[in-house]
Every structure is written in structure tokens, then in C-alpha cells.
Amino acid sequence: MQATDRPSKNKPKAGEPAQPATAAPRHAEAGARRDADTLDALQDRSRGFAEARPDPLEWTVKQTSEPQDIVQSSEPEQKLPAHLPDPWHVMRRVEVTGLSEHRSRLPLVDFFRQSPTARAFDLLRTRLLHTLRAQGWTRVAICGPTPGCGASFTAANLALSLARVPESRTVLMDLNMRTPGVAAALGLERAALYNGDMLGFLRGELRLDEHFVAASNRLALGLSTSVFHNSAEVLHDSRCAATIDEVIRRTRANVALFDLPSVLHSDDVAAFLPQVDGVLLVSDGSETTARHLKACEKMLAGHTQLLGVVLNRARNDEEFTSAS
Image 1 (cartoon, rainbow, N blue to C red):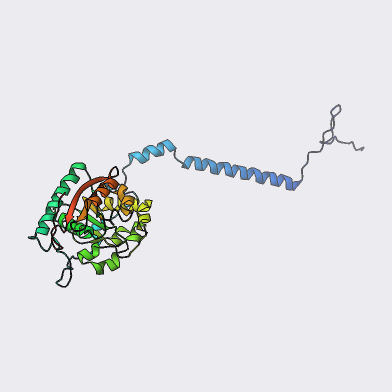
Image 2 (cartoon, rainbow, N blue to C red):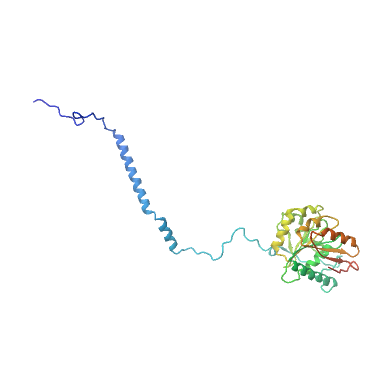
């Protein structure tokens, strides 16, 4: 029997063009299958995430409709910076008891209530308060035309008298850094050793509660001990003005008294005038002349108000009278 050739499956039929071989290597087919499986798995996983993730709008409605377990405080949230404590509660406490027989000091109004001196200071206090309240003023500079007129003594006793007024707060600052005298007038030299850096305080190097001392719940004192002859430059400094503003704001003082050097012997008073509402001038009955007072009035005119003239040592070295 003669064998016949069977047509091959890959052999093209008559009239058809020859087809290229399409057989691929086995490792290429396996890689293609793995890529397809991986793509299917990723698609299934993404579909699962989509089904598990809630609709954003639906989730928002559900969250707002369900009751909250968090208890919210009814008090308003406190914002920083926090309020500073009242300096009167943290000031160092001192007691004005520095009177003794061997000290050559004029009497203080708190210890000699029946003396003419106390009555004169109380009258000066009342007149001053009437003027300040009528004008809405707070800051008063106390100084003399020349050194030795008794400005520190007047400032100390007036501050003690003002502190006796109920529901009031008085601040006294010794800004006479050329010859400080408030601590000595009040018998607080020992306290001034620890709280007497007025220069550092005006430069912003000390906090208010680090420098000031409280003689009572109504009287705060800014003492000075160190002698500094270039004090006018310090009073010109903008840091000094900012410090004084902070003292008035934080202490909420009704009256602030500033003991300053003499008007005619330095420019300290002129440098500090922008910080005060008025000046109380202290004259020495045995030394001050009409020419001194006229020169002071001329210097103060147009810059601040002359609140009055206090006449010290009008009759002798131990008596005080006032006129304003």
C-alpha cells in the first residue's frame, strides 16, 4: 500500500499566504498568567475597599446625628497668654515702723494723726483727689525748685494719707535717683537693700513684683537706693515710659506719685513730664524765693499742669503747712 501525505495543520492551504509562527516560549506564557492573576487580585481588593468605605456625606450625617460622648465645658476656652496675677498679692510686704526717738525725722501722718502736719496732709490729699477725679488724671510728679525743699518727705506723707482712703490704691515711686529719699523718709532702708534697684526696673530688667513692696493693701512702693547721676537719660528712654504704663495698668492705681529731683538743678523733671498729668511743687519757706517759683512755672508752662504749691517749713524746721 502506498502511503499518502496528510496535509499538516500548520501548512497553509492553497491560495493563502503563509502565517508566521505564533508559538511563544513557556516562561513568557507563565509570566503573562501571573500578571493577569495579580491584576485580578488588585481589582478584587479595590472593590472590597470601596464596599467597606462609607459614603462621605452619609458618614457626616451619621456623625452629627448621633449623640456625642464628649462632655464639653461651658466655660470659654482660655487663650494664651494667661492673665498675670494681681501684683498686690505677690509683692513683698513691709511695715512702715521706722520712727524712733534718736532719728531726726519729721512725723509721719500715720503715727501723729492729731498733729497739724497730719491735718495739713489730709487737706492736701482731699484737694488733690478732687482735682484728679474731675480731670480723670492719675499721675502726679512731686518735686521742688531746688534740692532740700522736702519733696521726698511730702511725697511719703501724701502717699500715706492717700492710702487711708477706702477702696483706693496708691503707688509711690522714688525716681530721684540722684539723691533717693523715700526709703529713708519711711524708715525702709533695710527693705530698700533688697528691693531698691529702681534703675534696673526702669530698664526692664526686673519684674514689677520683684521690685515693688506693699506697705498695705492700698499702698505700693517703688524704692531706690543706688545713686545714679545720669538719671535723665534713663527717664528719656522709651523703656521707662513702657515700664510706667505697665505699673499703672497692672496695679490699677487710682493715684501714682513720682518723687523727682529739683526742677532747676537738672533736666530729670523735664525728661519725665510726658509721663505725668501734673506737677505738685514743694517750696521751702526758708530757702525758696519768688524767682525760683516763677522759673519753675515758666519751665512747666505748655508741658503739664501745675497742680499746686506746697509750702514746707513755713515757720520753723519742724512745722509743715501747705497751700495749693
